[in-house]
Image (cartoon, rainbow, N blue to C red; front, side):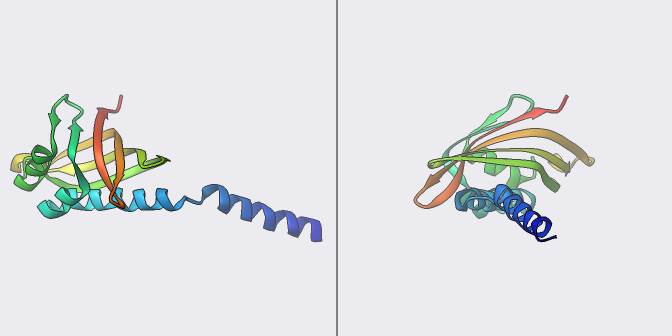
Length: 144
């Protein structure tokens, strides 16, 4: 009985260790969540704070935006996220660079038109600059 109990305790411990995130991964996850929230809220200062000045933001239709264009599209309502979820997220940190992949599921009201939906695969690249994780690049592709 003691062997079984020890095995169960050891198994639970290893399970927690395997699924635990590093400090950097946790910081990146917090930055990604701040991005998600800022995209829904449409707050210019929050969007500007999370995006690197050299941002390249790729949409699934091939449109590319820089930081100013990305922020303006959301703040103006051209891209209006009513709901926005990031699912199946993975984070890989290598030094001061992080690669984040997730599925984006959203309801939209772009340009004030009838509600729409988005269901995309997303890849973002983050860079740690002056102690803060900033989105440097983003590319979306349509799910097939």
